Structures are given as C-alpha cells and as structure tokens.
Length: 165
Image 1 (cartoon, helix red, strand yellow):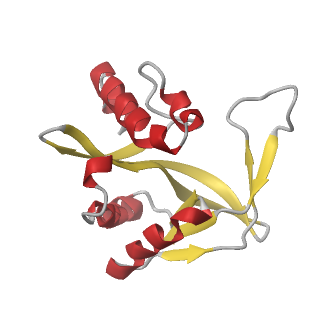
Image 2 (cartoon, rainbow, N blue to C red):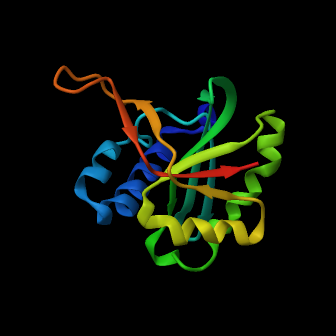
C-alpha cells in the first residue's frame, strides 16, 4: 500500500523511474525529480519487484471510476509500469498477472491501462500467459495532471487500452 512506503522507498523509486523513463525523453523523466515517485495521480497500491541491485520492476494501481458507454464503473487503473532496462526481454512483464488476486480483493471488474501504440507488441505478450485484451481505436478523455491557463483542462488521446479481468 502507498501509505506503507518510507521516504527512502520514494527516493529509490524516483531514481528508478528517471532511469527507466529518461531514455524515452527528458520530459518523461521530469515528474520524478527529487523524491517524487509518481506522475499525475498518486497510486494507491504498488507492485514492486526487487533484486540484489534494487528496484527491478514496478506497477502502480489506483481505483477510480470511469465512464464506459454512459455507465460509471469502479475499476483499477494500472500505471507507472517499468522494468529496469538491463532486465528488459527476460519476461518480468508477465508478473503483472500476480495482481489478479489483488484485483479480486479490491472487487473491481477489471484493471486497465493505456500505452503508446509503439508498445503494441510488448503489451500483446501479456496475453500469452493469461487473459489480457489490447484494444485500439478507443478515445480516452482525461484531466491533465496540472491545470494550466494556456491549455484546456482535459485531453483526448487514442492510446492502446489494456484490459485485465
């Protein structure tokens, strides 16, 4: 649970995210300055994998209501996904399935996350070891993490949507 993390945990996670997201662009690492270990909404629950070198992988989870075809649904939003670069390609991403009992405990019908279309092949590998659906062509409207006077308060994107029952 988020409230069980100590300051040292946040410092280590912030460094992990800077190193994991930094190679995809300086802007992607920016939210993790100092000891901030989240970007946008803060997770409620975290799955953190460790090895002898520290944080190896991370997935954040936050319960929230989303509207699907006019119906409000309580779901678990997955985010802050990362695997330490030197461990990519070893199958660690399949450990996302370890979250299934937690999702049942939280009594949500499904978890979802969004990723860039460039990650399609990567996320489709999740489905090989369990029920994961990858959808495209779905408009996702969300509130920006910081209100700005020069931008609308919401954005509409067309990412890949990952659904985990």
